[in-house]
Length: 330
Ligand code: 2P0
Image 1 (cartoon, rainbow, N blue to C red):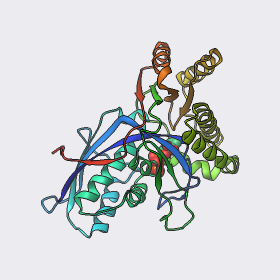
Image 2: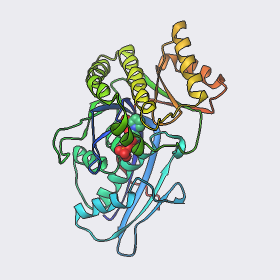
Image 3: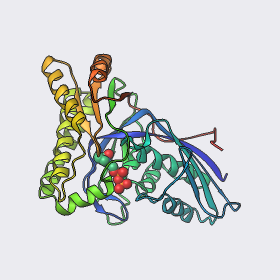
Image 4: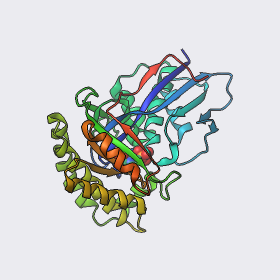
């Protein structure tokens, strides 16, 4: 088989990945934890053939423009591993706004890796797929798995012990929700890759981050296993604010928040005072993800949609890991 199609969901981190210990192999400074999000899906078809002279990559109907994420290099990495010389045609579609800072590269690289490995004839375990995916984009290695996932930092210089692993599958805690709240579409001012490199180099508080992240990991892993919403959500919110404190105190400062970001933060805090059980997390952009449980989802979503700065929301439950499907895009 030289053609294969995979689907993968985006993921949102509860303990963030923000800094590399090895830029080439994409090895993180700290272990991190995410939830794979049902319904935020990328579908990718890859075909290797001698009829293609060069790799071609079409994402959401547009020819891929080269950026810091080296998709062509990632395809080469996979074909080298399989020992094939043919070039690839790649067509990829996401069902959510790709430029909205919603982890599109995670679902994208996970789907690409699973499809390309299968099309190249490689038979890899989920762990090995995760290691391979990681070399394309770090957070994507978590999207190989469903439910709640930990990406291990690892210690080895070759990165063979830095892979993602399931904590619990999507059926363990089906009531958990992330409401992705869009306040701005379009590209962010500083990419994650550049932003995290600058943070490791210039932020005076980075040691403080590394020194406290172990507590966050422990709390969140325990909370997931105990299905203790407050334990997970409170620690996730704290971890997110620590990451943004790092970003803000690099040189030059990286401030991803816009007024609507603060509007949501202030409201979430006020709603919590009222007894509504909701917390927030924010990634490398202005959009906010609200953590809540199914029973409060409707009320919180209604409140979010009334805020001036909110464009739209997407409600996600724990979703599946990446998998092959039969229906090709071409
Ligand atoms: C995360 N982010 O844990 C963190 C939180 C953004 C903020 O992982 O350079 O696109 O390709 O490994 O994975 C975004 O970084 O960066 C990210 P690369 P990636 O979700």
